[in-house]
Image (cartoon, rainbow, N blue to C red):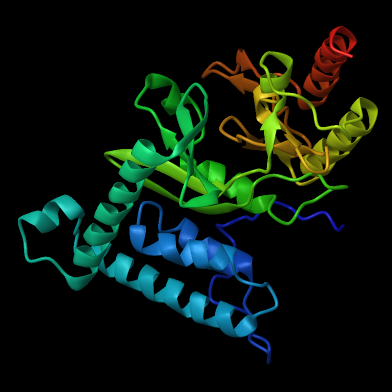
Length: 306
């Protein structure tokens, strides 16, 4: 598969092609939605985009036109210095009323998922639930803590998932994103539920590997996927056992949780962060080294549990 560089949204032609066919792409629509961070009116649009065939130009044209319409209205509101809070004390526009209704609806969905959904897992900054009404969809709901300020926002994490949505290497892939929202009361990322379990639930828990699991094949495929991911300039930087999945049907790997990931040029060291004096302030674990380390842990587990 041809290597694709991460989308540079600053240079993206969001208005479509100038050629005779006037085609639009996923990337052009995503570039518009990226400018609508925190606008719930764009959530349904992104959800629909994720379910649209890339070859369905008729639908893509409609989504593209709708995205531009939302962007135009949002810019008009910004020019008038409107916000949801200000709108409470002024005459609300039709757009802010719809925006407010969307926020309330999403808040209701999140409340139901927390109450009735199935708990999947928990990280340093978020809790993941499965919607029992839509079991192929899961919700990463951010907890209120200081650690979240040190990692990618749900909007930023969605950029990584979107950039990898079409990347599949010998069965290895990441979950596809549906939409995200950031509001003063909650941050949430809604995405595909990966059909498997994480390695930590096997190595440190009570779950079992699928019968067709082969350690050498598994980690060879995972290593190839990491190479392809790096070729796109994406580095995960948190490849612990909790963030590597096993597909229960195929035995193939999957990679999740891009909360600490980064885009990096080939000249950069993606695993180092520097302070104001350009001294190393933090070093993230190297992706390739973590793959080797995790293979050793899995082998030790298999040796003890033949």
